[in-house]
Image (tube, rainbow, N blue to C red; front, side, top):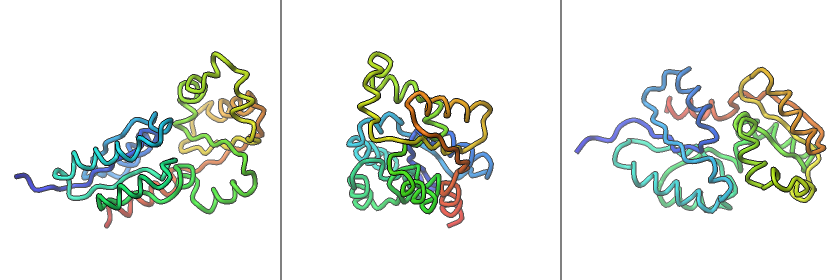
Length: 199
């Protein structure tokens, strides 16, 4: 039997591009990455079972497994699975928190609890994951009900992309939100993965 070696990251597909960029930039060849579909966020009760299945399918192949998810709306069920499987994950309630860093995110949330957050991934796929999934392409009048408690949109950018700020500002205007731009880079995603590789 082959000896398990290397580290497997089981990651949310919404972070796949960022993880790939960090892996290339740092030469982390010992890291393998398996991304689960980002669409699982639309059905968060499916995240924990999907992560468990991936852990169990790969446990014998890798010396270490690390989960690159926050709680992501699983209401603690992901943490319960990870305790049973003996696997760690990134800390935090959602990716906005570790991308912005907990301190900055807490400041943003305290300043305006009714904030809608965009990341680079969500900005790229906004029409597919938000507009079409919520049926706003067919029934735009539903936006008033879906977003009635939101007042502001904060774009947390991981990389500086031409036209991205303008697109995010257009989305804010489309729903009548105030707009704020924050460049976060990879936030604690980079520092945690660096520590994982070093440790």
